[in-house]
Length: 262
Length: 166
Image (cartoon, rainbow over all chains, first blue to last red; front, side, top):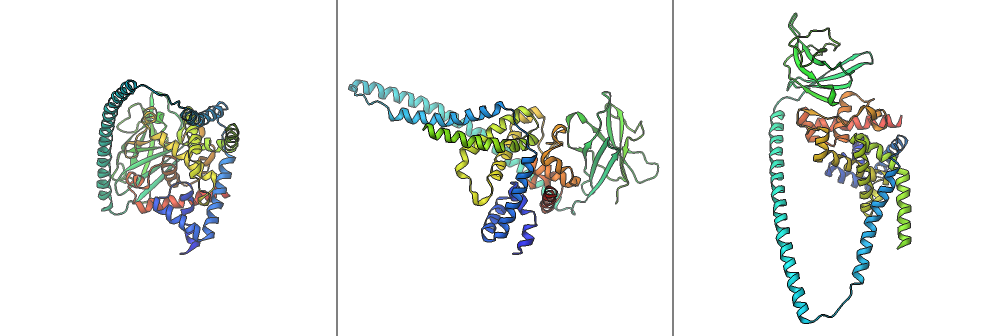
């Protein structure tokens, strides 16, 4: 194994941050035992991460410490109390009839308990079963859609950045294979309440009207918007439009991108 | 028993004094909501306490172990029904993806470093680390082959490390 290559492959960061798969984790742990160099590199990254996060730490509200402390000691003292009582359970002698009465009461209680728990268990299993069905269906769908995409040529993302001073900055990802358009917002000023931003695709053909790619609802603080698909585009632009959008731009673009390299 | 409890309190006090702030910072970046972040921090410390025996120092530092407990607790919280309703969060294959990025907390912590990454790298780290989506889910949602997702996340992580050490 090329240890240097392995160390710089990103596996260390992936492992430490909890992003590695189970197989990668196991392999990495074996490698750490076998190659001191890898374990040392892991430790160095862990230290750097710890230092970074400690430097940037944010003190939680001061009441929280006592709340957590109580929670932890409560769970500890609960166990202690129970053990204590169990040790001291008194043994009394009872007449035979008392035993019978006690036994039948216990039996009754046990059968009621059994009836309730088996019913609960049944409900729980039913719920679990339908959850599993759902997740199975979801997985099937995912597999189907993954198979659909894998038969296509490799996706090719075109990226266009739009910036206007420090006020507005967005990125557009256009997958030229699936034609999906994603919009990622870094910074956009809130529009007036009766206005909304609208995204447009500008076509390569001279004089062709821009194509509406949808409205951007800033209120929801989304990071990534999936916009309408577009077959062809040479650039993208955003205009400020009356709420609900327009069929063609009514204002000069607030921002527009450089031509996309096709 | 009293001395055991005192010792526990001392140990808890030590861990809390030294690490709660760093863990809280990460939790807040994942959750966004302050009240829920408090709950998650509480769950984190209760879990740390309960699972202390399973910490294996040959596999990494104590802080790393605690950090992963905190991240898992936070991501679990974002997957809970109540949270999704309150945040109107949608699954990755839905119409949109809710950011774990919040304007008021973007300016510190790992997020600050992440803003220095290239857009695509930033997106991938956000989806995988802060929102906890699997590589498979990301590949499906963005229509990128799984192998490519993995390579790009790895390279984004090494880039992040370089930023951290610069």
